[in-house]
Length: 351
Image (cartoon, rainbow, N blue to C red; front, side):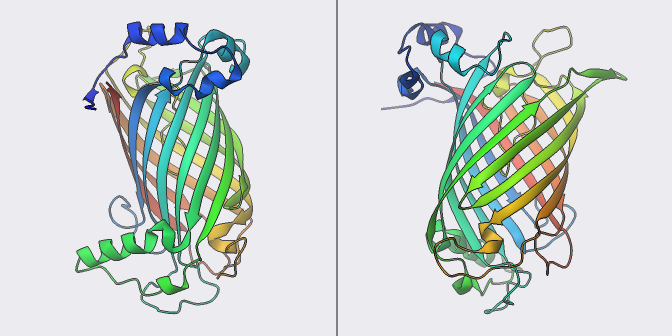
């Protein structure tokens, strides 16, 4: 079967309307994949080196992560949409996402074959993340289920060795034989985000997006909150910038998410944002070690704060974001805060 992909600026209303009219009115309707249409493709890259980290050039702790994510419109029938709606307000919308993500963690000195016992352990994690989202104009819910694996099977050692061998100036990571052992993982995440009505400041729009959430599972157990402030021209109707460690808004297509103050659609958007978040952490597998096998560990800090600032630009079907994050110490022997940069690229597709 041949599939033709093309970046577009609008959806296909006739096809979507026909999908909405058909289908099962029961709860199993959400499992009818024939009703789904593709919204966005998103690529993620986090790194603590010079690209994309502009503050430091390091190779330690949360050192690299990559991800690819697909967004879909499930086209819920009216009966099921009414049951799952976030509120009784108009403009209810839904989205489904599926992502493959890999994260790599290393100690402070990767040239040691036997890192210090209480330093950050070598750790790799590969996970498949499935999410369901619902939203109206002011509130957004994200429900996520992550199934993954740690250890050699995550491919993290092979990826880091390949990258470092490809560039002559990179140090060879020598301690991967001490990494967390292979273990399957499961985690559930929930986040609720609110959005204020945009305010006009010298011709620019500004809005705040507070959020609360939690994670529970074998990887991470925590409670978290954050406040995002963004300001720019033609702010999109989504609920904030996409991120690998957070999530993307799947309930709106990139090419349809920009609205001018008069209500008309714009084909571009640009904004700057800052986010301050805090987490109370009861478990972190990358510091506490494996749940079902002996492994290295470090003394985890129970409270961690993260400050992020960045920029997002959208044109037609394309999305490009860059951000810089500064994070307080995550374990007791960590000498100073962690910094890392993030690049996100996305595009709306149809076929």
